[in-house]
Image 1 (spheres, rainbow, N blue to C red):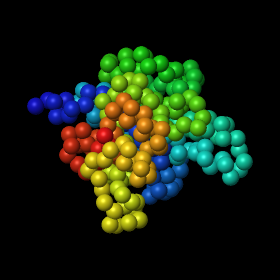
Image 2 (tube, one colour; image 1 turned 90 degrees about the vertical axis):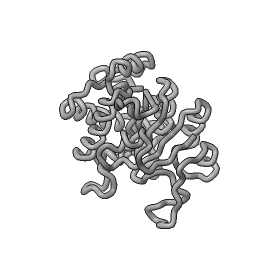
Image 3 (tube, one colour; image 1 turned 30 degrees about the vertical axis):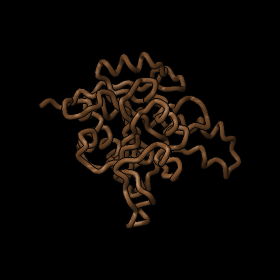
Length: 246
């Protein structure tokens, strides 16, 4: 049996938070800045998944460098603060690209919603699809190019635009729970849950705009723990704990 026959998705979009590229709160820097080991772990997962023939795109957050909401307490203009956050996603994307190409010898492209020709290509849907068909790992940077929207919303929008089969959201826990499992040891994990339930129960899978966009286009979301080698392949094969939002 071939690798691709074990999974039912041909094109996937992976969503990873900036904090994960910072190593999380357990890292020496408490998830702030870029952690080389964390970036290499994420890159290794993307490279391995790409080797199976699955077309791979990724949206990374920028929270390890900057969050627009932090600026509120300093009376900073929210629009300017959000643009700073978009630039943080470009920094993370370039770091991930560098490791993918130099460590794992994968062909990649960074496409940014904010034009910066010296660093990356401008985001154009047809160009992104062309890169994916050629087997390149496509990294979407700069959010959607507008303030007041999260990178979760960017992931949902890009997934719709490139006609992705599924969004894979890598987190620090192995799915969606009815309460915070880091605090409540009795928290219950859902194997499957609907879009509307995640909104009505305020489960924090993604923001409401992102969930609504997925619901309108019927794009499933798989929430899983991104922490061990081979986890992306196991998620697509249904071989580890996860939650399907559909």
